[in-house]
Length: 84
Image: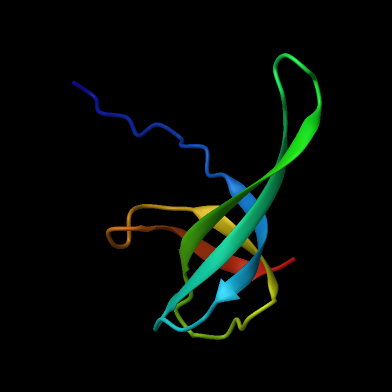
């Protein structure tokens, strides 16, 4: 049997660094808008992601782009790929 690797879709998100206290890890706040199903009003939803920063180069309030990747630790599944 041939085992072919499936191409996975790697999501990219843009957010702001809200914590840089951990070594090689940054907390990224991602903001998006959802629409209420009944009232059709848009509202803001924020989510925090822990992202890998191998060189410790990104600081607080930097706008960054993160990409989904394999699990790096218990809570890290994202890696910072650059500034927005």
